[in-house]
Amino acid sequence: QVQLVESGGGLVQAGGSLTLSCAASGRTFSPYSMGWFRQAPGKEREFVAHINWSIGTTAYADSVKGRFTISRDKAKNTVSLQMTSLKPEDTAVYYCAVRTGPGRSIFTPLSYDYWGQGTQVTVSS
Image (cartoon, rainbow, N blue to C red; front, side, top):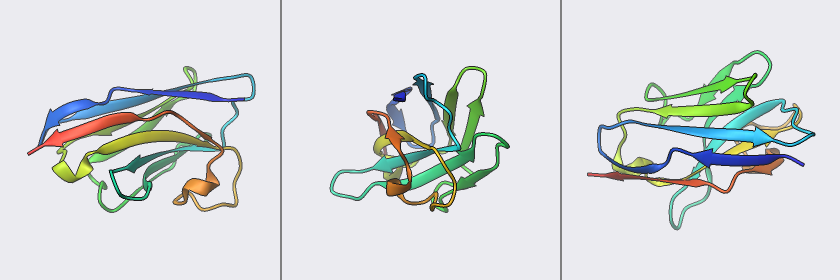
């Protein structure tokens, strides 16, 4: 089993910054890649960012490209999401997730095998 714990969420004014972290643990933690998703009230969970665990290549949703940066620390088994120029529409619960193998879309929540409990990000206008 793999456990994921997110942290770093909070309340921030529009234009501000936050950095989310996701700490992974478990004997079987051997990710192929990791991703960040978010879910606002009444909306479906949506893709935010992705990173290949081995080679570090990244991908972003158009809505966050240029503002968010995903990174990983292989030694610490953590993945981070640095968020800048935050907007009220970024308000959501943010989740990190692990994908254990290739061959599935990185943009679809169903492609991920383990999920954290989520951390709330609220951006005030």
